[in-house]
Length: 363
Image (cartoon, rainbow, N blue to C red; front, side, top):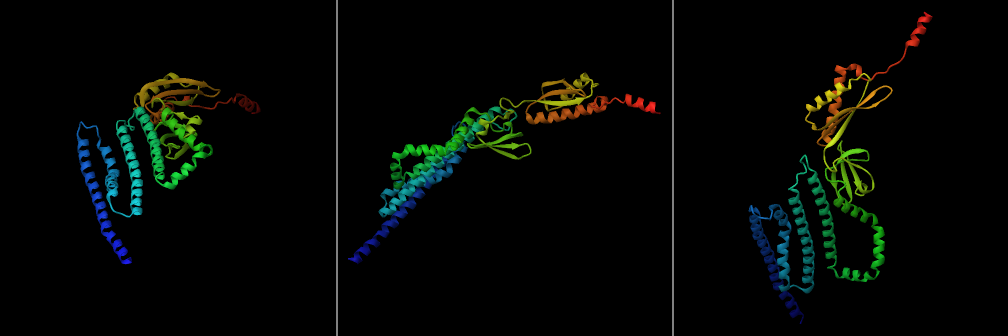
């Protein structure tokens, strides 16, 4: 009797081998389908009147290269002759892989759509207000969507395990208490997440905005759901929590437009010819490419007990040009006063008449 049982066991091996060959054939069939499908998709995307973009097709290739053979294997498994436990294991592993690959395909689709959308907007252009607004919103929404995809994929994979489902059912009775505990524990994290969503919608800051935060001048380099990276003028990076831009005041120099006004302050002697300095300012601006031609002017801002304070007001296309223009105007005005009106430079006056009379009387 033992010999017959042993022979029956040996008789299972040809069936298992045939099943393995069927799996291999299913994989090859899936790969062949992948090759044919993407040749058709790439040709269709290459047509000028096609609404399907090649960038999106290329992002689909890697997950589809695994998805199609896996689908062929899962469809073949019920007809194969494997031991029950081994067949269940293969089916479970295939289900987990299918969930992961579908999540990958969805993520690839989202990144491809983001790429296609941002191709229409040039962030490096001079007048890039609309492009920066769209880039900020799209990137934030992509991050939120990716979090949702990962959470849903992970939860779906966990629910394929029977023990996890049983634990989940047993915890339903205490879900209210657990929800309250989790809510208190994750209060700060949830606040940060909602702050990121609020930033994406209201947009107090956008990608590449020029801001003054913590007394530092810089540009918004990166915006995530939890933090913002500001590239400071000396290439240091200031990392701030996303809630900072909702809870604390800061300066945004490019909120509505990139153009900016700049001021130059000069302290001069009371003998300074204001009209001549004003005319020189117009001449300096006319010869500079940094000035946008909109605003210029010079006024006497203040008069102290020692000097007259002059303020030159100029405008530029953006903050970088405004800074360079301020430095340029300051340098040229100081040079003009040194060469043409040296008596207009600040000086310290003192009365020495009484002291000189005393010396004469002593002599």
